[in-house]
Image (cartoon, rainbow, N blue to C red; front, side, top):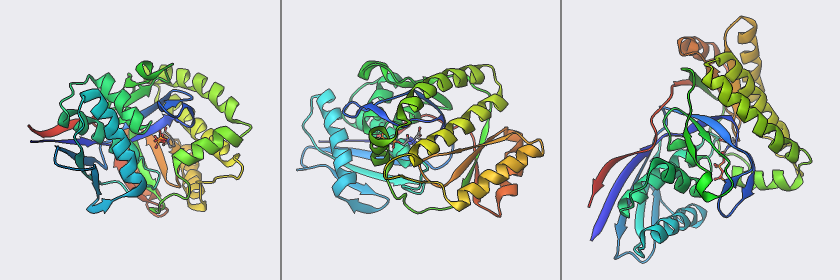
Amino acid sequence: MTQRATAVAHPNIALVKYWGKRDATMNLPATGSLSMTLDVFPTTTTVTVDAALDADTLELDGEERTGTPLDRVARFLDLVRAMAGSTAHARVVTTNAVPTGAGLASSASGFAALAVAAAAAYHLDLSPRELSRLARRGSGSASRSIVPGVAVWHAGDDDETSFAEGTPAPDMAMVIATVEEREKPVSSRVAMVRTAETSPFFPAWVTSTAETLERMVDACAAGDLDLVGRIAETNALRMHALIQSCDPPIRYLTAASLGVLDRVEALRAQGVLAYATIDAGPNVVVLCAPDDAERIAADLADVASTLVARPGPGARLVETIA
Ligand code: 2P0
């Protein structure tokens, strides 16, 4: 007997960043974070549970994968099997419309889609909160891609209290300014551990980000997009300063990233509401009002390849076959 389910999820871009864990086993973050789920770069994942399989298998973007990617998926499926009381293995087939490993959060859409598809394929009936907690175990940022639009991921004290949910926010757009599509030199997972172990600034990051998140939730609820942008840009630059303070240091920003940051500053000097955020890679995302997005994308077209994103849907099932 086989059971199959297909889910689609989109990446999210954090406006208050998740950087550092308090518990690696349960994947609990050192701080809460806040993000916008995008309407671009979907991941589509099909999980087929098949009692005849000896082991889980993974096909990613048309290629059979082994090693770390398969291990991460298999460990994740172990959690789902434990919840479902099943021992059957599964075939996972996934396609990403986002450049994998370039700092555009492919693990977020990946594990959000996998959580939704695997839960359905193993016949688990989970609430959105339970799905967010499950996705978190695969990749922290995936907890937020379960949620449509703007999500706050509560750091929580334990597995039950660490989940993402929607939070009121002004309408906004993001211009994704891609300067490079290479795989990043150090994965977020490795870089987070090094940061917590070696940066003298890490304790200050944890305490200041908790306060930043409170201000961000309030700014979102008040619909104050300019304040949302200011808080987001400050938080992103603090995260990169923190990462650069590791030993040995890690630097994701390149000359091209700084070039885009200069242009964002120039746009602001012209009176345009535009603020930058940057994940664990060189690419810049510009937060702006929806009506300004196309104009900002055109302005940046000579320094980056640009794409306008808007708030997107949460992870969802698109097909199930019992
Ligand atoms: C974020 N990032 O909040 C931050 C900003 C990257 C920079 O969440 O170890 O892949 O799988 O929980 O979710 C990337 O971290 O890390 C990330 P794991 P994840 O979006």
